[in-house]
Amino acid sequence: MLPTGRDSSYSGRRRISTLPTPPASTNTSSNGRRCLRWAASISPSPCMLAAASSSLVVVAELNVKQREATLVVPAAEETQKGLYFLSNLDQNIAVIVQTIYSFKSGEKGNGTAARVIKEALAKVLVHYYPLAGRLTISAEGKLIVDCTGEGAVFVEAEADCEMEDIGDIGIKPDPATLGKLVYNVPGAKNILEIPPLVLTTFTCGGFVLGLSMNHCMFDGLSAMEFVNSWGETARGLPLSVPPFVDRTVLRARDPPVIGFPHHEFAEIEDVSESAALYQKEEMLYRSFCFDPDKLEAVKRRATEGAGSPTKCTTFEALAGLVWRARAQALGLRAGQRTKLLFAVDGRPRFEPPLPKGYFGNGIVLTNALCTAGELLERPLGFAVGLVQEAVRMVTEEYMRSAIDYFEATRARPSLTATLLITTWSRLSFHTTDFGWGKPIQSGPVALPEKEVSLFLAHGKERKSINVLLGLPSSAMERFQEVVEI
Image (cartoon, rainbow, N blue to C red; front, side):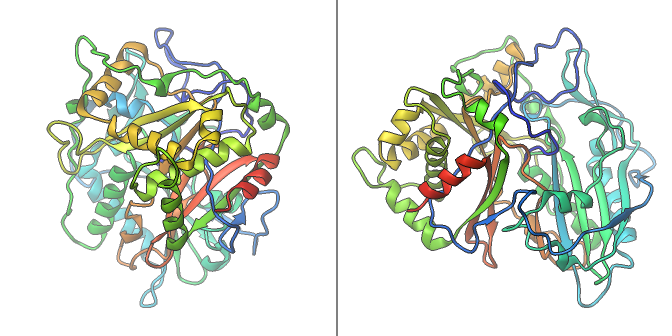
């Protein structure tokens, strides 16, 4: 899961730095902005549709009337109070992620949806009590939760059209339309003030649940477990995966022990002047659909050529392909260093593994680094091999070192000349059921930022992968030319 709602300008170097202005003691970066990359190597197909707000044809204007926000407090006389520790893995990506879930049942309408879901939220917050608190800044300049028990913000809304008018958000996402199905606090000054939940009913009897959640509270797996627990509660079932809420198991060592170079934090000089391209050109956002046959073709290509791996996963092949195609589309110079960042689930890699139901960020950013010349002059297998090395690098000691690195430096991953991949293709958000059946569709409201690209499972059997990405207009044109395989 990753951010949304930032301005689309691009200038200079970028670094993940999303905290509100911290105390003077905090060593956060303010030296520019990050840049989004990804790509896919595939022939244009009906699944490959433009999603730029300036060029997207919307079926109908979505008019939504939102009521006054209310607070849903935990359904218990008392929940745990006080300050709730967030680990350094939580601090690294403190950004807002907005998603929607569309539901419609032929057996019942949407008349009771708000009541049922609000009552279930009050009950599930007893287990997930930090979500009823408020984010604040600790004396050390870090994010921390003040468990006040104030409750989660909930907004009921009504749309004047049928839910089908939203369209297929997997292949034709429209941020301007979908943004009406989530809620932001009017006049909010920073991410600490943004509330999470809005339920919109439609004239057809369906409804959409829109969530705005701070990534410091969840990674994708943890968010999925929360939403599914919420749905189980709505259906009167016990939680199949109760949350493990103690994040101190990922506390930094004292003193910190840094055993790796951690290039994910490294600054890269923009010798290709790609920042200028982002400044002067319109950003285009598009979705590229890889069906199973095309995914197999990418994997075959990844194992061809001298020095290529003999086998690879779908993610490794597609990530290498995307990284390579993006570099070519942006016209990076041969000597330009370029970096790939992606998250690896650390839960099973810690020793011992993190407890089942760990509530928080269990992902660790890993990286691959080379020059654009190396990336483009060598076969695809070279890039895939670097991805595989990045995966193998994530061990217990590497993850503890990354936690300690943040403790010692307060640095956040630099995104200059970097592609950041986040994959939702294995997350089972599509199984969430509040009593109206599984979602008709679910997904992000928009790309979190132009620096981020998403892999999303697609199709009835979820065997295809949609790659959502954004590039300056001329780079997107070149990208479409070079992605054929």
